[in-house]
Amino acid sequence: MQDFFRELKNRKVIKLGIAYVVGAFVVMESADIVFPAIGLPETAITLFIGITGSIAAITAGEHYWTLGLSGIVMGMMGLFAYLLPKGKIKCYYFFFIIFGSIAIPGWMLAVWYIGGYLFGLAFLREIRKDAAHIQETLR
Image (tube, rainbow, N blue to C red; front, side, top):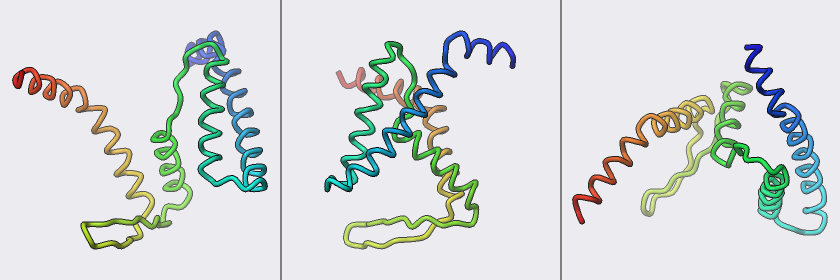
């Protein structure tokens, strides 16, 4: 474990991570205060934060993994399930002309989302191989 932290320190991951978290906090809080005051919609905040994160990645001069929207959703689902284990999330559905909503416990959605992610990790290569084989067969 000490080797792991030593490697993180050598690669300056900890400093960059702290700077990124502090910078992201300042950008998000500033946008959350300023954008509604000047009449911009909520989607403008999301777009601004995404562009700012991309600029930060370019400025850093090094490639580093970004979280992405699906990672944020997964993290928030896990956090919700942990902090509010009996809490429910209202989910909307539609089937042709039938529309409705259902309240599902947060932990069930977290398990479903994480399970889908793990399934994708485990079988995505095989699915791509099968798809490539089918495409070659059709040519």
